[in-house]
Image (cartoon, rainbow, N blue to C red; front, side, top):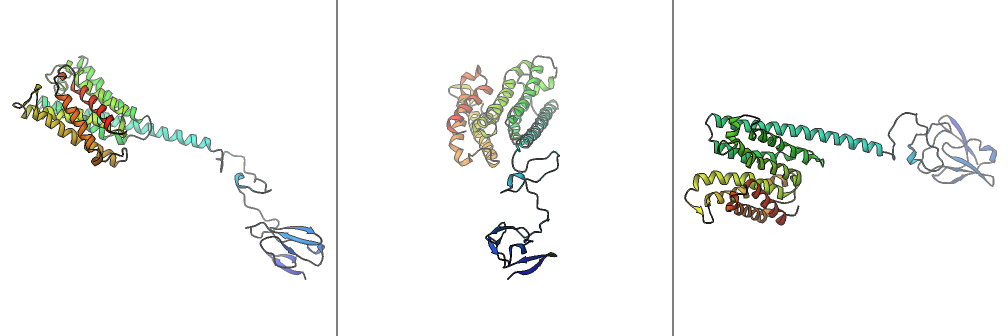
Length: 349
Protein backbone atom coordinates (compact mmCIF):
# COMPACT_ATOMS: atom_id res chain seq x y z
CA UNK A 1 0.00 0.00 0.00
CA UNK A 2 1.29 3.46 -0.91
CA UNK A 3 2.40 5.73 1.85
CA UNK A 4 3.14 9.41 1.98
CA UNK A 5 6.55 10.73 2.82
CA UNK A 6 8.19 14.14 2.95
CA UNK A 7 11.64 15.22 1.75
CA UNK A 8 12.77 18.82 2.35
CA UNK A 9 9.24 20.10 2.51
CA UNK A 10 8.00 18.21 -0.58
CA UNK A 11 5.44 15.36 -0.28
CA UNK A 12 6.00 12.12 -2.17
CA UNK A 13 3.76 9.05 -2.67
CA UNK A 14 5.71 5.85 -2.70
CA UNK A 15 5.06 2.20 -2.23
CA UNK A 16 8.20 0.64 -0.78
CA UNK A 17 11.73 1.78 0.08
CA UNK A 18 14.08 2.59 -2.77
CA UNK A 19 17.35 0.72 -2.96
CA UNK A 20 20.42 2.06 -4.75
CA UNK A 21 19.62 0.29 -8.03
CA UNK A 22 16.47 -0.42 -10.02
CA UNK A 23 13.85 -1.21 -7.40
CA UNK A 24 10.18 -1.14 -8.31
CA UNK A 25 7.88 1.14 -6.36
CA UNK A 26 4.33 -0.14 -6.50
CA UNK A 27 1.51 2.31 -6.12
CA UNK A 28 -2.22 1.81 -6.03
CA UNK A 29 -2.48 3.41 -9.42
CA UNK A 30 -0.04 4.78 -12.00
CA UNK A 31 -1.71 8.14 -11.70
CA UNK A 32 -0.90 8.43 -8.01
CA UNK A 33 2.86 8.63 -8.71
CA UNK A 34 2.71 12.24 -9.85
CA UNK A 35 5.80 13.09 -7.93
CA UNK A 36 9.04 11.15 -7.93
CA UNK A 37 11.91 10.91 -5.65
CA UNK A 38 14.59 13.51 -6.28
CA UNK A 39 17.34 12.35 -8.58
CA UNK A 40 15.29 9.44 -10.05
CA UNK A 41 13.36 8.87 -13.24
CA UNK A 42 9.96 7.10 -13.30
CA UNK A 43 9.37 4.58 -16.08
CA UNK A 44 5.93 3.02 -16.61
CA UNK A 45 6.15 -0.74 -17.19
CA UNK A 46 2.86 -2.71 -17.02
CA UNK A 47 1.29 -0.32 -14.60
CA UNK A 48 4.34 -0.21 -12.34
CA UNK A 49 6.34 2.92 -11.69
CA UNK A 50 10.02 2.02 -11.62
CA UNK A 51 12.21 4.56 -9.90
CA UNK A 52 15.75 4.40 -11.16
CA UNK A 53 18.40 6.27 -9.27
CA UNK A 54 21.83 6.85 -10.81
CA UNK A 55 24.46 4.89 -8.93
CA UNK A 56 26.56 6.70 -6.35
CA UNK A 57 24.37 9.81 -6.39
CA UNK A 58 22.42 11.45 -3.60
CA UNK A 59 18.75 12.42 -3.73
CA UNK A 60 18.05 15.90 -5.06
CA UNK A 61 15.02 18.00 -5.72
CA UNK A 62 13.84 18.23 -9.26
CA UNK A 63 14.82 21.85 -9.61
CA UNK A 64 18.06 21.56 -7.61
CA UNK A 65 21.09 22.94 -9.51
CA UNK A 66 23.64 20.24 -10.48
CA UNK A 67 27.36 20.58 -9.98
CA UNK A 68 29.26 21.79 -13.05
CA UNK A 69 31.84 19.35 -14.32
CA UNK A 70 34.62 19.80 -16.87
CA UNK A 71 33.66 18.59 -20.35
CA UNK A 72 36.30 15.86 -20.31
CA UNK A 73 34.66 13.92 -17.42
CA UNK A 74 31.00 14.19 -18.39
CA UNK A 75 29.37 10.80 -18.81
CA UNK A 76 26.18 9.38 -20.21
CA UNK A 77 23.69 11.85 -21.64
CA UNK A 78 24.63 14.72 -19.38
CA UNK A 79 25.08 17.93 -21.21
CA UNK A 80 28.31 19.89 -20.89
CA UNK A 81 27.88 22.91 -18.62
CA UNK A 82 28.09 26.30 -20.20
CA UNK A 83 31.18 28.14 -19.01
CA UNK A 84 31.53 31.90 -19.27
CA UNK A 85 33.15 33.02 -22.51
CA UNK A 86 36.55 34.13 -21.16
CA UNK A 87 40.16 33.00 -21.68
CA UNK A 88 40.96 29.91 -19.65
CA UNK A 89 43.23 26.88 -19.52
CA UNK A 90 41.62 23.59 -20.56
CA UNK A 91 40.84 21.31 -17.65
CA UNK A 92 42.07 18.01 -19.09
CA UNK A 93 43.23 18.45 -22.66
CA UNK A 94 44.60 21.10 -24.94
CA UNK A 95 47.36 22.19 -22.57
CA UNK A 96 50.01 22.23 -25.29
CA UNK A 97 50.05 26.02 -25.36
CA UNK A 98 50.46 26.16 -21.60
CA UNK A 99 53.31 23.62 -21.67
CA UNK A 100 55.02 25.57 -24.41
CA UNK A 101 54.64 28.81 -22.47
CA UNK A 102 56.09 27.19 -19.34
CA UNK A 103 59.02 25.80 -21.36
CA UNK A 104 59.74 29.21 -22.84
CA UNK A 105 59.61 30.80 -19.39
CA UNK A 106 62.00 28.22 -17.94
CA UNK A 107 64.38 28.60 -20.88
CA UNK A 108 64.34 32.37 -20.51
CA UNK A 109 65.02 32.06 -16.79
CA UNK A 110 67.89 29.60 -17.42
CA UNK A 111 69.43 31.91 -20.00
CA UNK A 112 69.31 34.84 -17.60
CA UNK A 113 70.83 32.72 -14.85
CA UNK A 114 73.68 31.49 -17.06
CA UNK A 115 74.52 34.96 -18.37
CA UNK A 116 74.52 36.34 -14.82
CA UNK A 117 76.76 33.55 -13.54
CA UNK A 118 79.12 33.94 -16.51
CA UNK A 119 79.42 37.68 -15.87
CA UNK A 120 80.07 37.06 -12.18
CA UNK A 121 82.78 34.44 -12.90
CA UNK A 122 84.45 36.68 -15.48
CA UNK A 123 84.61 39.60 -13.06
CA UNK A 124 85.85 37.34 -10.26
CA UNK A 125 88.61 35.98 -12.54
CA UNK A 126 89.71 39.50 -13.42
CA UNK A 127 89.85 40.47 -9.75
CA UNK A 128 91.81 37.29 -8.96
CA UNK A 129 94.43 38.06 -11.63
CA UNK A 130 94.71 41.67 -10.50
CA UNK A 131 95.39 40.44 -6.98
CA UNK A 132 98.45 38.48 -8.15
CA UNK A 133 99.55 41.41 -10.30
CA UNK A 134 99.51 43.63 -7.23
CA UNK A 135 101.41 41.08 -5.14
CA UNK A 136 104.04 40.82 -7.87
CA UNK A 137 104.35 44.58 -8.20
CA UNK A 138 104.83 45.00 -4.45
CA UNK A 139 107.48 42.25 -4.35
CA UNK A 140 105.47 39.82 -2.23
CA UNK A 141 105.67 37.16 -4.95
CA UNK A 142 108.31 36.61 -7.57
CA UNK A 143 107.32 36.90 -11.20
CA UNK A 144 107.69 33.18 -11.91
CA UNK A 145 105.85 32.10 -8.77
CA UNK A 146 103.02 34.53 -9.44
CA UNK A 147 102.64 33.25 -12.99
CA UNK A 148 102.45 29.63 -11.85
CA UNK A 149 100.01 30.38 -9.05
CA UNK A 150 97.72 32.07 -11.56
CA UNK A 151 98.18 29.03 -13.81
CA UNK A 152 97.20 26.61 -11.02
CA UNK A 153 94.34 28.47 -9.36
CA UNK A 154 92.54 30.12 -12.28
CA UNK A 155 91.58 26.91 -14.06
CA UNK A 156 90.85 25.03 -10.84
CA UNK A 157 88.50 27.69 -9.51
CA UNK A 158 86.79 27.97 -12.89
CA UNK A 159 86.00 24.24 -12.93
CA UNK A 160 84.52 24.52 -9.45
CA UNK A 161 82.02 27.13 -10.74
CA UNK A 162 80.50 24.79 -13.34
CA UNK A 163 77.66 23.62 -11.03
CA UNK A 164 76.49 27.23 -10.70
CA UNK A 165 75.24 27.15 -14.28
CA UNK A 166 71.79 25.82 -15.16
CA UNK A 167 70.85 22.45 -16.66
CA UNK A 168 70.03 24.05 -20.02
CA UNK A 169 71.81 22.49 -23.02
CA UNK A 170 73.38 25.84 -23.93
CA UNK A 171 74.79 26.45 -20.44
CA UNK A 172 78.13 24.86 -21.35
CA UNK A 173 78.63 27.25 -24.26
CA UNK A 174 77.86 30.29 -22.14
CA UNK A 175 80.35 29.05 -19.54
CA UNK A 176 82.93 28.48 -22.28
CA UNK A 177 82.79 32.17 -23.16
CA UNK A 178 84.28 33.13 -19.76
CA UNK A 179 87.87 32.01 -20.56
CA UNK A 180 87.61 33.70 -23.94
CA UNK A 181 87.26 37.09 -22.23
CA UNK A 182 90.68 36.52 -20.69
CA UNK A 183 91.90 35.33 -24.08
CA UNK A 184 90.90 38.65 -25.64
CA UNK A 185 92.79 40.42 -22.86
CA UNK A 186 95.90 38.32 -23.56
CA UNK A 187 95.74 39.15 -27.27
CA UNK A 188 95.50 42.87 -26.52
CA UNK A 189 98.44 42.68 -24.12
CA UNK A 190 100.52 40.45 -26.38
CA UNK A 191 100.08 42.63 -29.46
CA UNK A 192 100.81 45.83 -27.56
CA UNK A 193 97.37 47.31 -28.07
CA UNK A 194 96.96 47.38 -24.30
CA UNK A 195 100.06 48.47 -22.40
CA UNK A 196 100.17 47.00 -18.88
CA UNK A 197 103.71 45.97 -17.82
CA UNK A 198 102.56 44.69 -14.42
CA UNK A 199 100.06 42.32 -16.00
CA UNK A 200 102.65 41.13 -18.53
CA UNK A 201 105.18 40.39 -15.77
CA UNK A 202 102.66 38.37 -13.77
CA UNK A 203 101.72 36.21 -16.77
CA UNK A 204 105.01 35.74 -18.67
CA UNK A 205 108.39 34.13 -17.95
CA UNK A 206 110.71 36.87 -19.15
CA UNK A 207 108.41 39.88 -19.23
CA UNK A 208 108.01 39.73 -23.01
CA UNK A 209 104.41 40.56 -24.08
CA UNK A 210 104.68 38.18 -27.04
CA UNK A 211 104.89 35.24 -24.62
CA UNK A 212 101.23 35.81 -23.80
CA UNK A 213 100.31 34.75 -27.35
CA UNK A 214 101.72 31.27 -26.76
CA UNK A 215 101.40 29.37 -23.47
CA UNK A 216 98.88 31.63 -21.64
CA UNK A 217 96.70 31.92 -24.76
CA UNK A 218 96.78 28.15 -25.29
CA UNK A 219 95.79 27.79 -21.64
CA UNK A 220 92.53 29.77 -21.95
CA UNK A 221 91.69 28.18 -25.31
CA UNK A 222 92.04 24.68 -23.81
CA UNK A 223 89.85 25.71 -20.86
CA UNK A 224 87.15 27.00 -23.19
CA UNK A 225 87.31 23.91 -25.43
CA UNK A 226 87.09 21.43 -22.54
CA UNK A 227 84.12 23.33 -21.11
CA UNK A 228 82.19 23.31 -24.39
CA UNK A 229 83.09 19.75 -25.45
CA UNK A 230 83.21 17.75 -22.20
CA UNK A 231 81.43 19.84 -19.51
CA UNK A 232 80.72 18.72 -15.95
CA UNK A 233 79.46 15.20 -16.64
CA UNK A 234 82.65 14.03 -18.34
CA UNK A 235 85.71 12.83 -16.42
CA UNK A 236 88.08 13.13 -19.45
CA UNK A 237 87.45 16.89 -19.57
CA UNK A 238 88.17 17.17 -15.85
CA UNK A 239 91.33 15.12 -16.34
CA UNK A 240 92.59 17.45 -19.07
CA UNK A 241 92.14 20.54 -16.91
CA UNK A 242 93.39 18.90 -13.70
CA UNK A 243 96.68 17.84 -15.31
CA UNK A 244 97.12 21.09 -17.22
CA UNK A 245 96.37 23.38 -14.26
CA UNK A 246 97.47 21.50 -11.18
CA UNK A 247 99.90 18.92 -12.51
CA UNK A 248 101.95 21.06 -14.87
CA UNK A 249 101.87 24.08 -12.55
CA UNK A 250 103.08 22.19 -9.46
CA UNK A 251 105.75 20.42 -11.51
CA UNK A 252 107.34 23.72 -12.50
CA UNK A 253 107.35 25.12 -8.93
CA UNK A 254 108.78 21.97 -7.34
CA UNK A 255 111.21 21.29 -10.17
CA UNK A 256 112.77 24.75 -9.97
CA UNK A 257 113.21 24.46 -6.21
CA UNK A 258 114.23 20.84 -5.70
CA UNK A 259 115.18 19.51 -9.11
CA UNK A 260 118.52 21.16 -9.73
CA UNK A 261 120.51 17.97 -9.22
CA UNK A 262 118.56 14.86 -10.20
CA UNK A 263 117.63 15.32 -13.84
CA UNK A 264 115.74 12.90 -16.05
CA UNK A 265 118.03 10.73 -18.22
CA UNK A 266 116.00 11.38 -21.37
CA UNK A 267 115.53 15.11 -20.76
CA UNK A 268 118.03 17.13 -18.74
CA UNK A 269 115.65 20.07 -18.74
CA UNK A 270 113.28 18.14 -16.46
CA UNK A 271 113.85 16.66 -13.00
CA UNK A 272 112.63 13.67 -11.07
CA UNK A 273 111.28 15.96 -8.37
CA UNK A 274 109.18 17.94 -10.84
CA UNK A 275 107.80 14.84 -12.57
CA UNK A 276 106.92 13.12 -9.29
CA UNK A 277 105.26 16.31 -8.06
CA UNK A 278 103.23 16.53 -11.29
CA UNK A 279 102.05 12.93 -10.98
CA UNK A 280 101.02 13.28 -7.33
CA UNK A 281 99.33 16.67 -7.75
CA UNK A 282 97.54 15.47 -10.87
CA UNK A 283 96.18 12.43 -9.01
CA UNK A 284 95.08 14.55 -6.05
CA UNK A 285 93.40 17.29 -8.10
CA UNK A 286 91.63 14.90 -10.48
CA UNK A 287 90.43 12.80 -7.54
CA UNK A 288 89.10 15.99 -5.97
CA UNK A 289 87.22 16.89 -9.16
CA UNK A 290 85.74 13.38 -9.36
CA UNK A 291 84.62 13.46 -5.73
CA UNK A 292 83.20 16.97 -6.13
CA UNK A 293 81.08 16.28 -9.21
CA UNK A 294 80.12 12.80 -8.02
CA UNK A 295 78.77 14.28 -4.77
CA UNK A 296 76.69 16.75 -6.80
CA UNK A 297 75.30 13.96 -9.00
CA UNK A 298 76.85 14.96 -12.31
CA UNK A 299 78.90 11.78 -12.72
CA UNK A 300 78.59 8.23 -11.44
CA UNK A 301 82.30 7.61 -10.93
CA UNK A 302 83.33 7.34 -7.29
CA UNK A 303 86.91 8.09 -6.31
CA UNK A 304 87.61 4.49 -5.33
CA UNK A 305 86.19 3.07 -8.56
CA UNK A 306 87.99 5.72 -10.60
CA UNK A 307 91.38 5.28 -8.89
CA UNK A 308 92.95 3.08 -11.64
CA UNK A 309 91.83 5.49 -14.34
CA UNK A 310 93.03 8.53 -12.40
CA UNK A 311 96.47 6.96 -11.95
CA UNK A 312 96.67 5.97 -15.64
CA UNK A 313 95.74 9.47 -16.85
CA UNK A 314 98.19 11.18 -14.49
CA UNK A 315 100.99 8.82 -15.43
CA UNK A 316 100.46 9.31 -19.17
CA UNK A 317 100.33 13.11 -18.85
CA UNK A 318 103.44 13.15 -16.66
CA UNK A 319 105.35 11.07 -19.18
CA UNK A 320 104.38 13.35 -22.07
CA UNK A 321 105.33 16.45 -20.08
CA UNK A 322 108.80 15.01 -19.46
CA UNK A 323 109.62 14.39 -23.14
CA UNK A 324 112.06 16.69 -24.99
CA UNK A 325 109.38 17.29 -27.62
CA UNK A 326 107.87 19.93 -25.35
CA UNK A 327 110.59 22.31 -26.40
CA UNK A 328 108.66 22.62 -29.65
CA UNK A 329 105.21 21.54 -28.48
CA UNK A 330 103.79 23.63 -25.61
CA UNK A 331 102.83 21.81 -22.39
CA UNK A 332 99.54 23.68 -22.23
CA UNK A 333 98.51 21.87 -25.39
CA UNK A 334 100.21 18.45 -25.21
CA UNK A 335 99.34 17.64 -21.56
CA UNK A 336 95.55 18.22 -21.76
CA UNK A 337 95.40 16.52 -25.16
CA UNK A 338 96.98 13.31 -23.87
CA UNK A 339 95.02 13.45 -20.60
CA UNK A 340 91.68 13.78 -22.41
CA UNK A 341 92.46 10.98 -24.90
CA UNK A 342 93.59 8.56 -22.19
CA UNK A 343 90.62 9.64 -20.07
CA UNK A 344 88.20 8.70 -22.86
CA UNK A 345 89.83 5.27 -23.02
CA UNK A 346 89.67 4.48 -19.30
CA UNK A 347 86.43 6.24 -18.32
CA UNK A 348 82.96 5.62 -19.69
CA UNK A 349 81.30 9.04 -20.31
